[in-house]
Image (cartoon, rainbow, N blue to C red):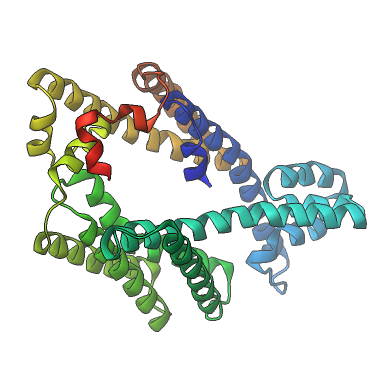
Length: 358
């Protein structure tokens, strides 16, 4: 997962390098996906009686559409992007079993990371922070194990009502994404927001997204996103206002080492001098502007890969020109000015702030 690779880096430069590398590697997947989709669409236009299952389009195209002379080339792209097709075509039975087992293990590492993340929310952010602050390590381990089992069972139960990968993808990325967007956003940009408001918003978002998505299967995913995010946002703000704010020492420690933009004026003036706050504001403004440019670059890069495969040359030329202008600006304005110091959280904590983490 992207979060795990980012957290494994040592410097901010490494984070940028990892992000750029991931974006470049995804180019192959976008190009390969566009080629497969174009071939499948062309085949169905010439064979209207043939129905292609969208979730089996890759093996269908490779076995029914691609000429034999080009099969190895596309299979090589499949090796880079969707490994299973390559291994099913060009490996023996014994090796194939070992490879499939290793790929399943690699896939499960993503699943177990997601499960562990969800379990940690309950164990650390809810149980230890709000229910039992003096919990022993044995109690925390027990809570983690029980919550992991509950999460797996809930996921298994949800899978019974989902018939396609596309539907579960829409549920996880759009419906559930809408349910958690406001709690995560407010946590960074609003000093008055607290853990109780975040937990209430997350629970409301998850429950509302699940209820609406499964109770109204014909409702569009954009509508589910709107309703779930609205419910989560209202509950987050209301609960945050109705409960005590976060301790000042905790806010000061967080702001000193993260320095986020947003509604932090009162906290920021207790942590830094006016000249330092001016520099922090300039840095945040630069990061925000570069984030917009990076989003344009990312979209342009992926669309360029699709455009080249589909031979849409005027669009490809425009996108290439956009990248030629924006990439040097991002490199000199955003990448090079970064500090290269190692990130180590404990040494960064000032002595007077350490009690805020206890």
